[in-house]
Length: 87
Image 1 (tube, helix red, strand yellow):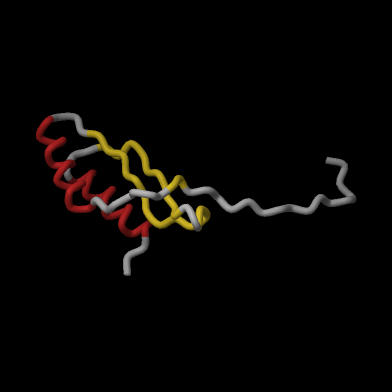
Image 2 (spheres, helix red, strand yellow):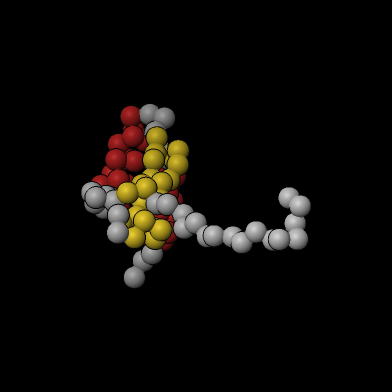
């Protein structure tokens, strides 16, 4: 089974191979598990109409539903203060 990172990397590679430019990726999570990445949104651009058509084909092949997903939130760990520290 492919991980979200595997699927992201494949989409990024396909966009670059098509001549596109990856402008960024956004990790997404299920609202019930906001600290676990389940998918990535890949933001891509294209310098020409021909490349844009190729990037659109990549999107059609790799797109998955992102409905209901929320931006991933890192899990915050509580840190105990060191009583001996002056910081």
